[in-house]
Structures are given as C-alpha cells and as structure tokens.
Amino acid sequence: MDLKEKAIASLKKHASGDAFSRLPAALPKASVLIPLLLRHGKLHALLTVRSVNLKHHAGEVCFPGGKSESGDTDETHTALREAEEEIGLPSHTVQVICKLFPVLNKAGLLITPVVAFIESSFTPRPNADEVSEVFTLPLEFFTKEADHSCYPVPSVFGPTHSFMYTDPRTGHIHQIWGLTAALAVTVAALALGKKPEFELGFDLDDPASAFRDVLNRRLSKL
Ligand SMILES: CC(C)(COP(=O)(O)O)[C@@H](O)C(=O)NCCC(=O)NCCSC(=O)CC(=O)O
Ligand SMILES: Nc1ncnc2c1ncn2[C@@H]1O[C@H](COP(=O)(O)O)[C@@H](OP(=O)(O)O)[C@H]1O
Ligand SMILES: [Mg+2]
Image (cartoon, rainbow, N blue to C red; front, side):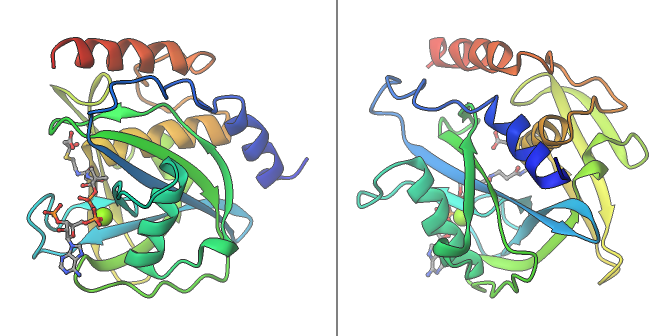
C-alpha cells in the first residue's frame, strides 16, 4: 500500500459515522474540513489564517470550515460548502475520507471534523473577507517536539498544544494552537500511525473512548 492508501485505511478505522447523530438537536453545529494532500512524496495538511476583521478567532490559524446553514444536508456538506466559499476548493475534486468525533468548543459549538484528500495541484483562491492566507505543511510536523509546546490549560482534550511553524515559502511564522492544533495532532497520529514525540492525551488504538468521555463531560455541564 502506498502512503495515501495507508492513511485512508487508518483514518477510516476511526470514522465516527453517524454515532453522534442523536446529540441534542438544539446544539449549534459547525464543521471543519481537514484537507490532506501529497506533496514531495509526503502527506501535507492545508490550513488557513483567518482575516483580522472577523469577530471570532480573528487572525488565528484554523482549518477551512464554519457554521452549519439550513440548506446543508449533513456535516460533510457544511465542511465542503465552507471550504468552497473560503478558499475556492471545488467540492467535486475532494475525496472525503471520513468524519471524526465531534468536539464541543468553548462557545458551545459542536464541531465535526471531516477528513479529506484534495488534489496536489490545488491552487487556493482565498475569500479575503474571511481568509488572509492559506498554507500547507507536512503532517509529520504535528508529531515532532521541536516547535511544540504544551500549556497546562485544558483544551479539547488534555492540555493545550501549540506549534510555531515557519513557512519556508513566505518566511511567515504561524502559531497553530488550541482546537486546530488538537485536530491536527489527532489526524497526524491517526493518518501516519505514529505516536507524537510528546504526550498525546489519548490511546491511539481507541481515541473514540477519550473523545466520547470529553464530549459527555462537556455536554453534562451545558
Ligand atoms: C470552526 C469554527 C469553530 C467556526 O467557524 P467560523 O468561525 O464560523 O468560520 C472556527 O471558528 C474555528 O476553527 N475556530 C478555532 C480556531 C482555533 O483553533 N483557534 C486557536 C485556539 S482557540 C480555541 O481552541 C478555543 C475554542 O474554540 O474552544
Ligand atoms: N461575505 C462576508 N463578509 C464578511 N464576513 C463574512 C462574510 N461571510 C461570512 N462572514 C463572517 O465570517 C465568519 C465565518 O463564517 P462561516 O461560519 O461562514 O465560516 C463569521 O463571522 P464570525 O467571526 O463572527 O463567526 C461570518 O459572519
Ligand atoms: Mg469559517
């Protein structure tokens, strides 16, 4: 099996399917697309920098995504629609792999991560109202200790991870932290089948249990 097939097989083992479809319907929902691509023979992930003019998370690094709208058929539809709106990613060129476990953010938004492969040749067309920059980086970056730090402040699960990534293409230094870092670390560990050099915070063989526990704990406090 090649790198991409291995990643797909490994990610599919952790697909949440519709296991979370019976959660309280009233919870506001959002989706993020975690776009993976092959570049120079390695798995990469695509991230965006949010416009500084946005009301929430201005200037922060995040995956393409956003809130569910009434016309969306499901969480995957939301992720693909948002990615098309934000970075001009044509939905028909995206190979959706799976949905992962949803996470509840601090604002009480239930966020479903949708993992997908996009074409290596994709050229982003950022919508300047929402996205100021798009960049890709090797997925294995999120398994290394070198540019990683950890704060003892609870995030989605375990402590808050933070990474400083210097994009060799632009020289820009990006901080990737909190929710986005937690998702990136998870997908890197699952897709590469590799424990990070730092404490992951959950069992790589059974991440679903850890995510379910965290979600139930958060839901019980609502
Ligand atoms: C997917 C969102 C939650 C909603 O999309 P929208 O704002 O409508 O485009 C998006 O805001 C998002 O991905 N936010 C997180 C960005 C991030 O990871 N920032 C750094 C850490 S903040 C954090 O982790 C706190 C939290 O959200 O619980
Ligand atoms: N055309 C537009 N111009 C400016 N802001 C927009 C916009 N379309 C959406 N937004 C804002 O962009 C943010 C992300 O939207 P989405 O959920 O569609 O990704 C939201 O703001 P907030 O930062 O207040 O959440 C939303 O109000
Ligand atoms: Mg958005």
